[in-house]
Length: 160
Image (cartoon, rainbow, N blue to C red; front, side, top):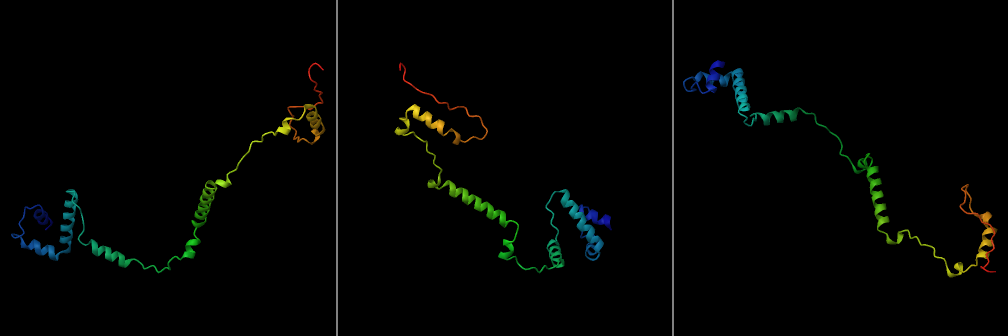
C-alpha cells in the first residue's frame, strides 16, 4: 500500500485508475498520516513554506489546556514598593539639583582679588617691621618652616 501511495505522490499512478487508494486515504489513519508526512518532507526539501493544516486547532487546544491564573492587578502602591523606584527618584533628584545649580547665575561663587589700598601701600617700612615683630607670635604655625624670619631692621636712607 505504501509503495502505491509513494507512486501516486510521484505522479506514476493515476488516482482514477486506482480508486481504492482514495478510499484507503480516507479510511485508514496510518495511510493518511503517511501521506501527510511525505508531503511535509517534500515541502521542506523544496524549501516551500510549511504550515500544518491543523495549526489553529492545535493552538486553541494548547490554550484550553493551560491553567487560568487568577491574580490581582498591580496597584500604584505595589509599584511604589518596587526596587526601581528609589534609584529612579534619587537619579531624578540629582539631575534636578545639578541643573538648578548650573542655571542659577546668582549662585555662582565669586572670588575677588584683594587690591591693596592706598593707605596700606603708604606705611613706612620701620612701622611695618615693628608691627610684624610685635605680632609674630600670633601668626599661624602648623609645624611648617616659614620661608621668612622677621628680624628688626632699621631702614635709613642712603647717605644718612
